[in-house]
Length: 475
Image (cartoon, rainbow, N blue to C red):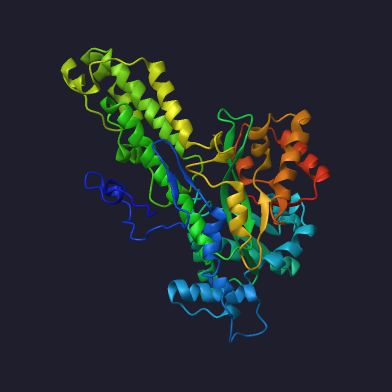
């Protein structure tokens, strides 16, 4: 089946700042979509990835290259040439770390190595969770690499060792591709930096402590080939699922309550959604639900108010909804319909629609499905097809533990058992957990003592190595 987006999603004359690039590429899947009024899901995922295995550039014969560079470096050089037409010799990419090199590094790392405050102690030697403005970060890739290179030179002068650094943008390969090209075009500048091509991939999983019993979390994946056709299609497929879900959900609630005039452009405007960045956010469908419920609640409230009261509260309404039609008398609200629907009934109906799109268990099929997120097994299937398998690390396990069960020491065994279950189904790739997470530093409400207790429990009861990063603290 071909997935096509409506014109409202590709060209908007009323709000040109929310235009999205017109999609000329068509996404075809051998087993096609299962698609009905209330759910969208991808089927035959294993067949889908097998279909692309022979197309992946990393599987093509490699010839006429310097024997002193790794196969992984050669693959990156081929990928750059294939995608951009630029000739960057593999010798220029020697400081790009392969999965094998990264795996050899892991046993020697501790949480102290990832904390930028330890610069003076000469133990801050690696940062493995840093995001650019392609994702949730504020800096562009060049600015980030420039800072990393300067610190790498300082670190090398003190220790005669190279600084290891990874860019981990969420659900996008654009930043890491850009970084590899920058390094390849000026290898001398980055001679003291070992760059790890990486990505943070979202996946849906069961979460008994969540309202819907399922949540989305992230895995840090190190040693990726971002030019892999399989991986690129996997990420594009995820973004497509999120966009399709938003379009379908808003269309369905608008059919259910046409008097509220739900609108895709209005949703995008209110959430400041841009084409690339914001569709890389997991759990995006929660924003859609919030939009639907907020607009319904506000519209119902407007029916019960006299015009003067509506005008008085206009600022609050506009803050929530953006632009809304406010008339001079009660007739202005006739568009909302003659029948006043109870607030609780609206929310209940919207929730019922929403639950068919969010991650949930399909009781008929007896398996977990999700319209807007990839599942864990799908991620593992994709990553295992790389010629040299990457290394996976559980991202921010403290939050993961919160989704799965309350963050109390007596529940830690259950959480760790689930982590072991994930590891057992990771095709040997899940080897680490994130003991130092940037998000921990950004959340003032977190109890650091509980995080330390949980990390110690993971160290004691699993064979996972440690990874981490300090985020935006290189300077």
